[in-house]
Image (cartoon, rainbow, N blue to C red; front, side):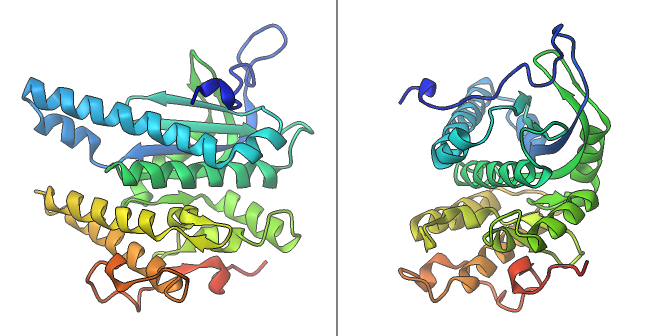
Length: 289
């Protein structure tokens, strides 16, 4: 299927009428592949390095196409005024809301859903992501990425995300809490964001396995195998807990939907995680106004 079928981001969303780059208040996401630099260092053999390059390029292409296909309705309805940029193993997304085209809540919900689906597909390809979402000023063009929002996301990704999760910064949490109470985002928002033991909200990317409220358990089972395969290749003690967290999160998702059609215990990872402190906002973790 040709990429021309899908709406693509506009490269001019962060330039003025004269073509000069401008800062705009936006919902911003920064996503990074967990352990990618280490993987490069461990593949000193040229043949293995080429295989890793081929894998990552295939995963990126597959994940981008999956986002566009699964959100084709959103791409058609929302104004095409957002931007994204890949560099190395990172992805930056920006959706400005400082004009009347979309509300802050609409922009945030769109970026969350894009991040959710991108994170899921990359995980199924064997690449687990961590990152952060926030709101603030950014300029995102073919030539430059600049702004405090990018710095905020980078700091959160490197110092607070820690495990393979995409967390939400406090200003964005406040925006979404109000938007949810005022019904500016759909009810499904409450199950698309989780609340972790350390207080951080993060994107519930396995929620993207639902289609019309029905779980695609084959994707969940693929996620299980991707975690186990990644765990089998871990040789560093500081990395093991990160995939331990992924196991816990995977099992919590299975626990939430254990009564759904098609569920089987075979999709779980054999760990005692049903008493996890991970909660969805829809389970009563939404902070008071």
